[in-house]
Length: 454
Ligand code: TRP
Image 1 (cartoon, helix red, strand yellow):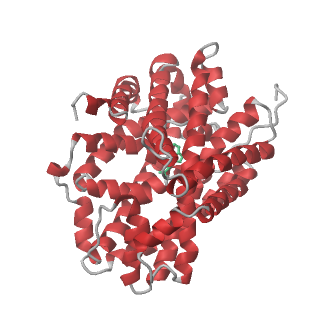
Image 2: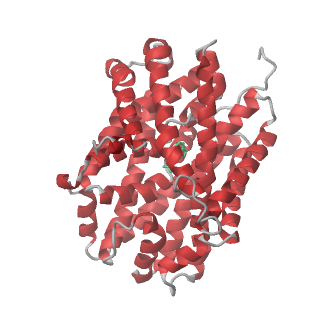
Image 3: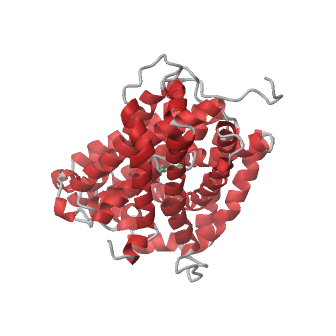
C-alpha cells in the first residue's frame, strides 16, 4: 500500500455482505414501527404507497450509497474528499456521524427495553401484571433500562470489535438466518390462531379513503429509516464490498429482504392482535403492551413471547453494529486511531449520550426542550431532519456533482455488467429523489402544516 495504512478490511463473501447490509436495514423500524403505521394509514393502501417509495426512491439511493462507498473505498469523510477534491462536500461526514450518534443514543434505549423483556418472558413474570403499568414501571425506572442499554452497547462492541470479516460479517451471517427462522415459527403460530384472516385483511386490504397526504409522506420517510439510508451506513458498508460484487443485484436483494421482513412482522402481529380482539393501533406500546396481552392468551405463549423479543433483540443488534461502524471507520481512517481503541471510544461516548435518553421517561420526563423530552427531540431530529437531508445530499452529489456517468463504471464493474436501468436511475437521482425528499423535509419540519397545506 502506498500510504502506509494497514490493508483495508473487507467483506469475505457475497452472502456476508448481504447479511450485514440487510442486518442494518432490518431493525426496530420493520418489526415494531412498520406494522403499526401501516395499520394506522389504511393497511393495504399505505402498503402500496410504501412499496412504490421503496422501489422508486429507496432502491436508487441504496445503489448510489453502495457505489459511492465502493468507488472511494473509504469512510464517509474520506469518500467525499476523494470523490470531490477541494470541495466542501466532506462536511456531509459531520452530518452522517452526528446522525449516527443521535440515532444510537435512543435506539440503544429501545433495544434495552426489548432485552429487558426477554428475562421477563422466560420467567413468565409479566403474565400476572397490567401490561401498561409494567411497561411504565420499566421505562420510568432509573437504573434498570440504563443497564440494559449499556448491555446492548456492550454486545454491539463485542460484535464489531474484530472488524468487518471477523466481526460484523461473522455474526450477521449467523444472526440473520436465525431471525428468519424465528419469524417463520411465529408466522405459523400466528396464522393458525382463530380468525387470523381478520388480521391479514387489516394489513393487506386497501382502504384508500383511510390514506391521507401525510400518510403518503410518512411512507416515504419510513422508507429511508427502514432501509438505513441517508446516513452513510450503506456507503460505509459499500466501501468494504469487493469489486466483483454486482451492486445492482445486491441493492435489490437488500431492499427485498427488508421489505419481506417488514411484511412478515405484520403477518405475525396483526392476526394475533385480531385473534384476541386487541387494538391494532396502540402505537409505541404495541409490542410492549398489546403483544404481551396476545401471548398471555396463547397456548405456549411465554415461549413465543421469548422468541419474539429475542428476535427483535437480534434485529436491533445488527442495526446498532452498522450505526457504530460509520463512526468507527470515520475516526480510524481520518484520525488514524487503532480500530479497537476507536470502538471503545465511540461506544463510550454513545453510552454517555444514552443516559439522558434513558432517563427521558423517568427522572427527566419533565425536562422538556422545544416541548419534547431529550428522547423525543433526538428521535425527531434524526428521522425527520438528518436522514432526509442526508438522502438529499447523496442524490444531489450523485446527480449533479460527480454525475451518474462517472459512477457508471462502478455500477457496471467496469463495463462487465449491463446497466439496463441507467436512464431511469439517472432521472430519479437527478430530479425525482431530490424533489420528493425536499417535500418530506418540508412536511417533517411541519412547514406544510404551517402553510395549511396538510
Ligand atoms: N434501518 C434500521 C431499522 O429499521 C435502523 C437503522 C440502522 C438506521 N442504521 C440506520 C436508520 C441508519 C437510518 C440510518 O430499524
